[in-house]
Amino acid sequence: MSQPEAVFPTVLPVWVDSALFKGMLRGIERESLRMQSNGFLSQADHPKTLGSALTHPHITTDYSEALMEFITPPKESIPEALNYLTDIHAVVHRHLENDEKLWPLSMPCMLDDQEENIRLAQYGSSNIGKFKTLYRHGLGIRYGRRMQTISGVHYNVSFPDHLFEQLQQHETDDDLKNLSLQDYRSHRYLGLVRNFIRLTPLVMYLVGASPSVCKCFMTGRDHHLLPLVKGTLFSPYATALRMGRFGYQNSAQKQLGIHYNNLKCYVAELQKAVNTPYAQFSHLGLNDEQGEPIQINDHVLQIENEYYSLVRPKQVPQAGETPSEALAKRGIGYVELRAVDVNPYVAIGIDETTAGFLEVLALYCLLKDSPELLEKEQDMIEKNQNEVVNRGRAENVMIQELDAEYPLREWAEHHIQAMQALAEMLNQSYETTLYVDALTVMQQRISDVDQTLSAQVIEDTLQSGGTWSFGSEMAHRHVKYYEQHVLSPETLAYFEQLTASSLQQQQQLEQETDLSFEDYLAKFR
Image (spheres, one colour):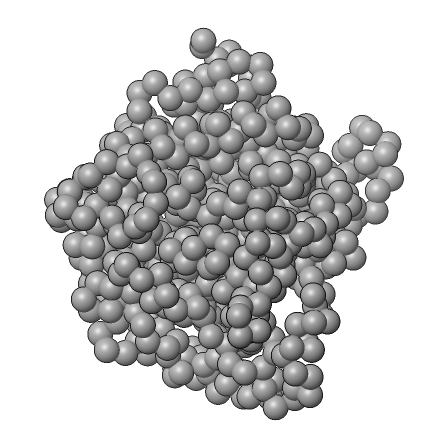
């Protein structure tokens, strides 16, 4: 069925001026495994010379000790954010030991048969440090440790309050006009979240870069993947296996019924999940035979961060607050776009093209009408996501919507066309060509499937003779990039100072503890 032109009219209101987008902020979180020179996952501790993974604001670890996470502060432009991320990578590279390298793909480097050799991240002897490691132990027994070796890019974006003020003034609904700015901002951000969920198949097709996996990742699992080349499995038309059932999945979460239709309900549903026991996790027990804790609790979620979602509404928590408490008190401050694969061709995992596309998409999702997301549509979206994850590059892929179904390329084309005016507006705001250029690249990927990152990864994996060879070649190439990147004396001094202060902070936390970990955990449980 052909899609009528008028389905996606421009979402840019006539009164909008480019000055309204000045003050947008973006921050990037990038994950990357440390890989030994033989291609296997690192068994070494997080380098002490980089400071404390517990307290360092920019260089930490995610689920496993070898999975590094690099975090930029919010920045006023894309080049600034990417440059900051490059500084972090260059600093980290200087401190990697024994010829270790940063693995450049979302799906992991070589893992051996023993799950226990995927070491849990360690954060020292303070109660909060032990708590973080216990949380990861719980994830390991719930879902297996292999899942915890997957890397991604999280893109955080916020819009300035003066944009929300103008949007609110132009509302025709009195109820929306009468909301406080905080509540109105949250209302609009939730609209963004719902639309981003609807459009994740677009993200998976355009920036998905995990169409294949090292065979070792699938050890002990049933799967439908086929051999691509020795040691590598793939799905012929896949785009982003990381986002499918072999990636971050939680069967218990399917029944949670967490919705994004209003903030109060979202917060209540999240908090309920942290307080609701789940039989399958209860069977695992809370402690082992020696009485040592093996998971924080037996609830659907041990803590709120365990909720795996494609996009998260966020507010910066203050000391002692959970993420949902921060949202309840101060509303949504920004959104975290989480459906982004690491780009293996870029030394820092993300480039201007992807960043520009994500920001135009976020603005499109913010301004576009966003009806409530109910079960029927949610089921349809999940089918669309699975279809694009596993078969996104096939000729006959269809996207289902409530009114009809459309060929994927045609559906994608229409959305990219509808975003064009927004890209032009952002170009004006930032005096750049970056945003329109990004959409041009995305347009090429829609017109020619061989231009997609996932198609390139398959081709280069074949040429290299396997996932490890391809990843290794890229890792070596990226080393040259880090070494050529000039770090100013100020930047070097800043990171050295952070190393010292973060280690000091960790030490302080370890000394301040009067409460035993058993009591600390009992209070939490």
